[in-house]
Image (cartoon, rainbow, N blue to C red):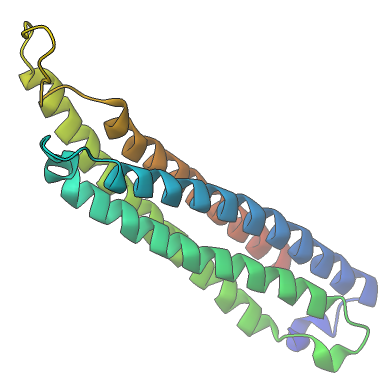
Amino acid sequence: MSEQLDNLSSSKVRSIGQNFRITGWISFVLQLVLGIVSSLLLLVFVIGRRPGTPSATTETGFGVFLAVCGIVSLGISVYLAFRCKNIGRKLQSTNSSNRPRKIETVKTLQLALIVNLVGMLLTLLGAQAIVGSLVVKAVSSQTITTLGAVDPNRISGQDMLVVQANNNTITAHFVGLVGSIWLLNRITK
């Protein structure tokens, strides 16, 4: 950041560093919590299948795969948010040689934007596949079943876990996008 930040006052650079630290921490914590919750929900969904009943993942398998890909990209985004926090700490250094270059910082923010956009796309596609399979399941279910019989076409609470996990992952990617865009706006002013 030395090419333009040397022209800025030391207090302005520290202010940008403070923005990076705070936004990095908020983005890191929110994405980490939502990612852990999403991962646990998907784990419960996959492990919680009852033996002898049709696998819920046979209908939603591709959607679950895309949801897992979204969570993997969320892990990368969590790392990048942590990096932004560290960039903020370095920007607040009184020694200007310890400060990262502007081009490196902008590239980190651009990478975070791309990772979050790709993760959001994968998760949205997964959500569409899952919701589509659940709609087919709900529409094709029989209206009258024998008492006590398990209807394999019935949408269960377990099926809804994967929908909730996808929603959490989409929200986490949105948090990452907002944080990266805001920081990119701060650094290019």
